[in-house]
Length: 389
Image 1 (tube, rainbow, N blue to C red):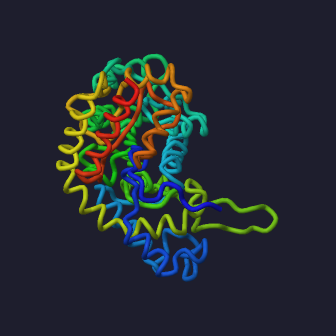
Image 2 (image 1 turned 135 degrees about the horizontal axis):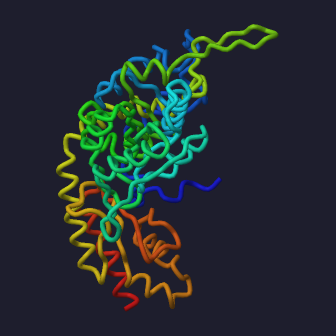
Image 3 (image 1 turned 90 degrees about the vertical axis):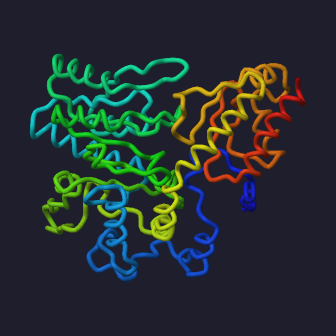
C-alpha cells in the first residue's frame, strides 16, 4: 500500500480541521503499543462493556466528557450518527408509550445522518423553513410555528432536533431559544454538536437540551469513527437501558449490554486517542474567540479575490465557511479538467481538502492553522485566479 499521500499538506476541509490528531498523541499511540491489536482496551474488561472498563479508565473518561459538556451521563458511540440513532430509537419508545405523533421537527440544514437515523426507526422528519439565499438562517420562532402545525394536524411532536452548526453554511442555530421553546412545550430536545463540540464552549444545560450528540473525529481531535451521546439522568435511564431479552433455548442473558449502542461500542484506537486528546480539547475551546478573529480575517481575504462571496450568516460564528466562487466556475467551463482543476491546482500549492470537482461553491476551514499557513492558502487562490484570467 502506498504511503499516506496527504502527509504534511495544509488541510482545509471543514470536516477534518477540528479532528486533526496532535502529533504527540499519534506518537504516543504507537510508542505505547495501542496500535498492536484491534480490541486493545479489552484485556482487563470485567463487566463485559467497554464503557465500564477501568483499565484504561474509560468509565472515568465518559464521566469527564459528560461534565465537560454540561451533562450527567455519556456513552461513546459509533460516530455521531450512532449517537443520533440512540436518541431516535429512544424517542420511538416514547411514541409507543405516550402515544405521541411520530414526527421529528428538525432544522432544514440538518446533517443527512439526522434524517437517516429517524428513518431507520420509523420516525418522520418535518422542517421549518430557513431564510434562503444568501444566509440560510433558521429562527426559533419558526420552530414554534412548526410545533403548532404538527400538534394541530398529527398530535404531539416526538422530538425537536437542531444542528448546532450546520454542515452546509456553518450557521450557528439559536439553540438556547429553541431549547426554551422545547422546554415550554414539554418536547424532548436533541442538539447535534458534531461540528461544535470540542471547538467552542458548550453547556447543554444552558441549551436546555436533553440530548447532545458529538463527533470526536470531526471536532474533538480524535481518530474516527467515534462519537458520544451526552444526556441527563432522566433520559439516560431510557437511552442507556441494558438488555432484558433472553433466547428461548439457551436462556442466555446480556444484562450489561446496551442495545441502543449495539451492546458494546468502539473499543480501540479511536477511543484511546480521544482519551489522550481530551485535556487539549478542554483547553482549546477557551481560545475560540481567537479562532473566530482568524476566520474573520480569512473571510475578508477570500472576498478580496475576484467575485468570491461568503454564504451563511454574518457575522460568521463558526469555522466552516461556504464560498460562492463565480470566477472559478467560469474557469472550469473552458478548462480541460472541468471543475477538478481547482483541487488539483491547490494540491500543487500543498493545500488539500477542497471537494474534488467543485468550483462554483467551495467549503473551507482554517481552524487551527497558523498565520503563515492561512497566508499560503490565500496566495494560492489568488495565484489560481491570476493564472487563468
